[in-house]
Image (cartoon, rainbow, N blue to C red):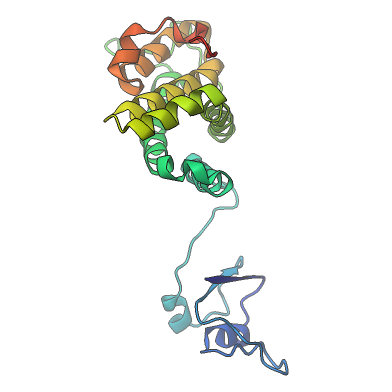
Length: 233
């Protein structure tokens, strides 16, 4: 499959040229260009004023807010795709890893946002961010980048990598998910968890143990903020 990426204003003549059957005619060029039968075209533009309603309705349009930029989920999915391309040996594991990343990070971020990144509540039945009214200063895009950096470092550590591939070869049900959950939990402690105030960390660690880690790890591991990986552990 061939991809043609065009960046700039959408000229009607250009649209007509690239959407016509092969051979490909680029405006008034002579001779014509031979184009592959399986060709996909991406237009990157900041306005669609010159596009006819008929053409616009036939396009699959993706809008990226220039002020917002990519979300944490965009970054996580792009990371998984790029790692599969760079390290093909991880391809068989990446579907599970990507699904766990998206599912668990969604809940982790929701938890952090609710308890640590909002103004303290007056409702005495609710647990406020802190008795002093402290609010954790979190930049989710930055922390997601930090999380993926920690997670990649752990995932590709030779010892951990060996455990993962051994579990995949043994085909023990749930073993790979158990190990990946541990890596996600430890990466969350090192990224999101490191930005919390000291008195907020026990609650975050309890959440990671109860909702992210496998029950075996959640009940047996020492304090997560003191835990590190080496060849012995």
